[in-house]
Image (cartoon, rainbow, N blue to C red):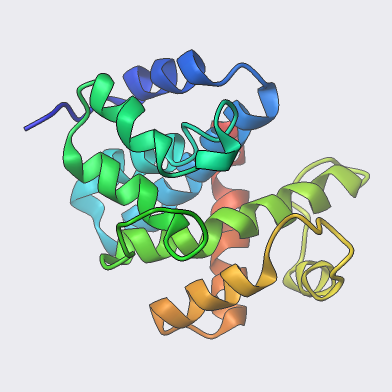
Length: 188
């Protein structure tokens, strides 16, 4: 059995392999969002969900062509538990060479909200307030429908994630937006 790091230990691991502020910020954002979802769906494991969110893109900055594959090796070198490895790499299933299919609710939520946090984050940058706190679902839906906006964030992956969860797309959008509002102070 490997190590399950604390959030602070996981942040140090993230910074070891990621130097760009964007990637560190994205990890912190997804970690905060995952913690928010955990409070609703798995309150005994909030820290685990936060660590999974924080580390989900560990290999992306250095090895974008081997995303969710190289990560296994890096995490094994760090002595991380297989549960962390499987959960973090599951968001690349069917998209990269990742072998672990999202099966647990946490893994499905990570799969669904990873790209969505990118769209919301890009929309926030365009807001006069530079904050998610005053963003409405209507505004997010408009940005989501505009395929040119945050074009690198796959709407198909987001829809597939909502389907995996058995949620309507609006439910996923609404909950993820609320998660980012409620946790904004944790990732900024």
